[in-house]
Every structure is written in structure tokens, then in C-alpha cells.
Image (cartoon, rainbow over all chains, first blue to last red):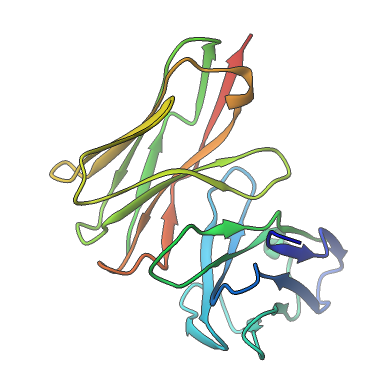
Length: 114
Length: 114
């Protein structure tokens, strides 16, 4: 497709479980971002990739959160030992390059931790 | 880090009226200020942006103004239509010349009544 694709669109899990959220950016976009959006809030920066490497992961809340982008395209956000406070919409976005162009967001993955 | 405040949190207008949303930011190094529109169940979509070397920018019914001295910027929508109803977010970049890390406001729910 032409846009940023995120799967799953909805994920319900139990406290303590492991979760993976996938992002497929727009083809040719080298910069990829993960944001988290809690109910009634604006998106909060988590991490961004320039190519395969995580250029800035300062927004990851703790070491239960990890993200990879092994081939410089698809990215996976991984959350270990989920907690109820992790419930949110996880948004992925991509840009052609980090310093130019519009940031395109996917529709998000809604995570609910019971 | 950067802090972005957005007001009002909700705004209701009659079709054809104007709507104004205001934001302030804290980091004087910020130099990129985009506005996003988010419809229910969708990811944010860029509607207009402005850089710090420009005081005002217009695109049809939408305009953004920036006052760097006061560190505030505003979104103006004229001749509002029901399809303008959505949540609007302002954002500011951290880090001077790079706009890779956006800090978002908490959003304004705009309702345009027919």
C-alpha cells in the first residue's frame, strides 16, 4: 500500500505477557518513528531509526520496551512483561529523510493490557 | 526538554465561523512547528507547518502564525465546515536544525455544528 501500515490494529493481552507490534513504513522512507498516544493526550516520542540503527531511543519508558529495524524497512516494537499502564495506541510514522519532508503516520496499534 | 501547551482543549463553532487554536512552547531552540489533524481511529495527518524564519503561512482556509519572541503559535481555520471536525494537535521540534523529535500538545477537539 501507499501508506504506513501497522499490525495488529488491536491487541488485547494479559498483564505480564510479551507483545510485538509491527510497522511497515512507506517504501523508500529512511526515517521511522514510534510514538505512544494515551487517551486524551498527544503522541509521545518513543524512538526513531535512521536506516537500521536506533538514532534516538530516549523516549522509551524503561527496559521492557525495545524496537528493531533489522533491514532498514519494517520495524517491530517489543514490550516485555506488559503492565496495565502500557495500554495505549502505538503509532508508527515515517519520513523520506530525517530532516526533510512530511511525517506520515499509520493508523496505530491499540494495545489493551488487562 | 520541550514542553508544548495547547488551548482550548475543546472548541465548538457554527459552520462558516472561524476557529483559532493556540499553542505555546518552552524551548527557544525549537524551529519547526507542524499542525496535525486526527480523525477518530486514524493516525494524525499533517495539515500545515511553519518554520521559525517565517511569521505566517496560509493554505486555502488554514493559516498558522508564529511569534518567536513570545514562543507561541496559532492555527486559524476560516469558513469552517463539518468535515473540519476532528482533534487538532500542535507540535514543536526539539534540537535546533533537526525536526526528528516532535513534542505534541494535548490536542483540541474541534466540533463544527451544521
